[in-house]
Image 1: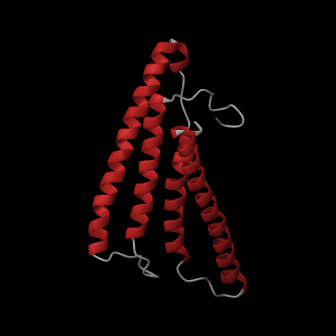
Image 2: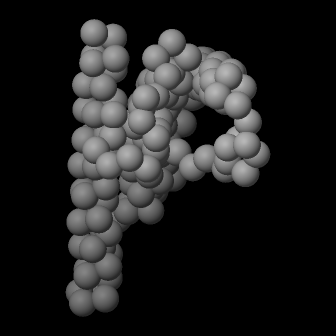
Image 3: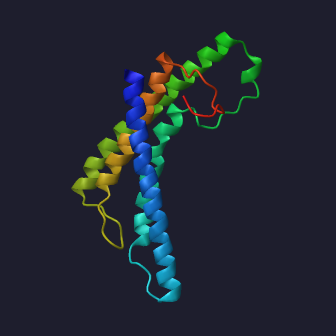
Length: 164
């Protein structure tokens, strides 16, 4: 039940990230076309691109982690016994989960100051603080996935088609 609910949430976050990617692609295409054909670029594309990439990365991170899509260097790992591999997987999941929980926590703490000081992008004055919340959500979701992997280790290998 918990794994199924997590799959639903990480998939929804990944769809949002995908939608942002498509919107960013269309925006960039329109900006380039406007710049070169009409000598009229779209104002603020640079600022929007920064925010969009941040949202795409942190909303897609948990999906990738849930489906074991992250890069793993296994030069020595494959030479170890199954017990050691299991221990290492759980230890790395715990360490990564704690690390991303700290990122989420510190991002939320920092968002209070960012909102209080009304920090915004330079060109179109988009406030920063909502994107701190997106970053914190994505980091917390990835941390949850990592910690979930301690108790529900991945059954399939990362290169197995079809995910989990």
